[in-house]
Image 1 (cartoon, rainbow, N blue to C red):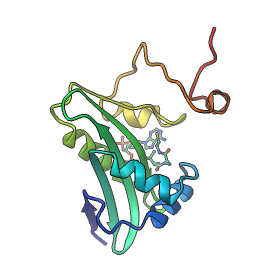
Image 2: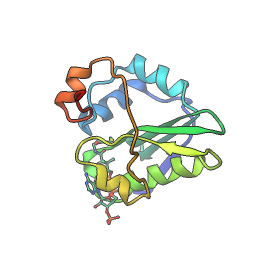
Image 3: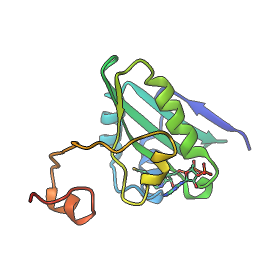
Image 4: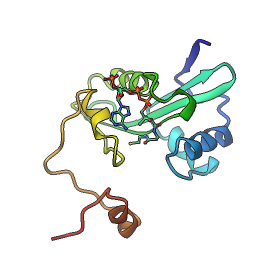
Length: 144
Ligand SMILES: CC(C)(COP(=O)(O)OP(=O)(O)OC[C@H]1O[C@@H](n2cnc3c(N)ncnc32)[C@H](O)[C@@H]1OP(=O)(O)O)[C@@H](O)C(=O)NCCC(=O)NCCS
């Protein structure tokens, strides 16, 4: 079945999106939180196979300097078919003109992003709401 791409959020079922993140898996994200963060994102990609949402990603961008790509997920039934790469490439294309496109990878996905041209940042740092959890999952390194 052909895939249908949607670049706006009109008519998005936020509960269906929340379920996609749960099964991908990319964690538990409530429908309300998703509606808020996608509304505040300049670029968004939703991919459907028929009526079923099978892929998603978004970019929090300022229009000229920085575009931050995040919340990429592909339904397990379609993982490994090139859809994740295609969504990332679409978000990169939409971000054209920004001086930098940044992201951080979930542990285990660095090679996937490397194939799309992302290089490691030497000085990236972050403040997380729950630093202990982020350290535990390998996203952050404890202070020296
Ligand atoms: C990570 C994810 C988005 C990748 O999407 P996908 O559709 O399965 O990946 P693709 O089929 O587009 O893969 C593109 C290329 O990356 C490679 N690749 C995909 N996932 C990879 C991984 N975890 N590690 C290393 N390489 C990977 C593929 O082998 C493929 O290589 P090729 O171009 O040489 O053939 C998807 O597996 C997913 O949703 N995972 C769960 C949620 C998640 O971790 N999201 C990322 C948050 S940072």
